[in-house]
Image (cartoon, rainbow, N blue to C red; front, side):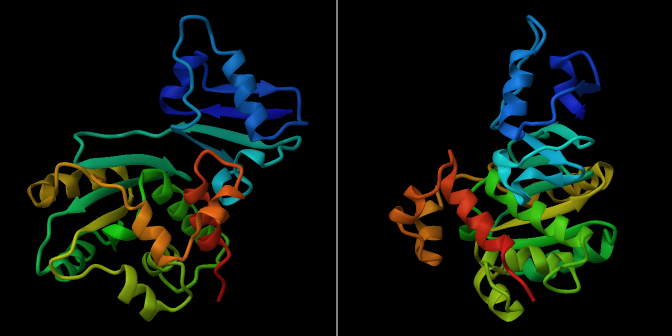
Length: 258
């Protein structure tokens, strides 16, 4: 028996917060197909490209993605990605955390600015990542879920999750290299990754809104990222996925060890 918890807007598709599914011989992909077929008539259907699937609290993208096998007793949470507020911010739920992405306008004091935010909002995880190292929201979600899973398993690459996040975006085990490559710099575009309570994230957004650009992701970074990490088209062709670049980057990040 599989237990499927439906969070946020996913509840509207079934008029229920929880489903019990007798079959336990399926993977995530088959489960999503089952849910699609059993959506109530005239109700909104789940968008498989705009949801997070967590198995026993772990994001499936940190496991085997949609090929992750499910077993009897598993609790699967279906969480729609939430794009909160204006286009200046992207919000989504991840492993019982709220995550927000915003893009800072170019400033000479971005490092001091982030440090001041950390001091004021000590309960919020805040990290700045240079723009070229985040492909899109889906890429960010996968990398952050790996860091959160590592934190839960006590296998962080450093003693702080903020540093772990930066190292995984930079795909390096060296803190100094991660800071040099992907850390924020003066007069350079950077994206803030913030993890915490929704109320705290809303307070921060209200405080810094004037310092943010109107769009978090406004250009295609795929060429820069492939060049940075030496990723070839032949490598991408070997990955059976609708998002091969994001999945390859997530794999590179997931296999980092001490």
